[in-house]
Length: 114
Length: 350
Image (cartoon, rainbow over all chains, first blue to last red; front, side):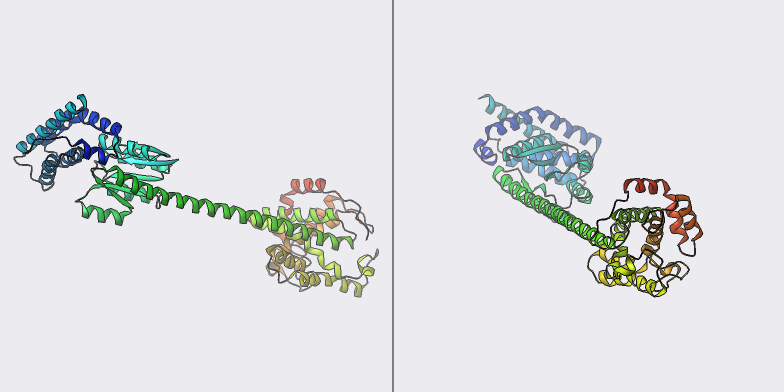
């Protein structure tokens, strides 16, 4: 899978070239990313299908906001699997998505630091 | 200022949409991360536009729209649902359920601005039409009120014109009109009917305009033939007022024709009896006779109040409808106030 690369121009274009909103979004992503990762694990452990589907859906939207097409596709695939009731052997997919969320987090952190 | 309600369980989306709404200008965003709380807010608050996410816990976007549209007065407020582009089935269902437009995720500011501005324009047009309809309604009510006031004034003046040719006075007209209203109220008639009889009763004797002076102004007792002519004032009044489009004048026509009918059928001009006499005629019969008895005239002294009451009591079921007598006596305190408020004055001579 290709590493995440920040396409700030595309994101800013969607946000109407509003740096303020962009910075705010990044801040919120960085604040929430660990909560998202924790939720994925705990919901899988609890076998809570509806909540896990919603969490995958939320992460799909989150990654789409930061123009991460591959991460979005991973979250979409997870959402679909959970929706179909396939909760078996989801741990690798969830771990991969968690890794992607953290990878995006690192890139975003570097972007605002730089 | 437009109130824009935003509902999304994702805090980052809520923050993004709120920021974009603020960028629109002239908008006040109200945000909820819980659709159930948002619906509670909507019960007492009216947003100008709603932006709602599709996938939320407890209540999804479709259920929210359905609950929102079910609230009174919320069926025309624009609603935008935020969905992923591939959720076509959801979109169709949302359209059927009352969504007006959609926003794709990830949200694009240009698309967001265009769609929200369009729907806020629609809302503004709705408000303009509603305000205009209210304004027109108020204008019509105001003009109708003015016409009604003019109509009342004309009726009073016409009634006074008839009274000028009669020993009775303007104060008599007012007293008997208010007595009629008291009876109507105590009979349980609604406020509209009470007001109608108050305004129409003054016309009861307008037919006296057509009675010759030598009869109308005769100080002594009328001869049989003279009384027969005098009785004609009831029908004359009816002829003068009938076939009007005005509710008040039509009621006046009925009162003019029936206020001398008696409950036992011995009155005039039609010898109607009991409930065949229209209720306004039965009411005015009591009010008019009571005031005539208790007023001083050039040809008679005023009766004592107790004597006039006894006359009414004695006339129950004969001259008067018993219910109307009862309703009149039940309002005795008000009757006394009306008597004090409208005192006789010397009628101008013409």
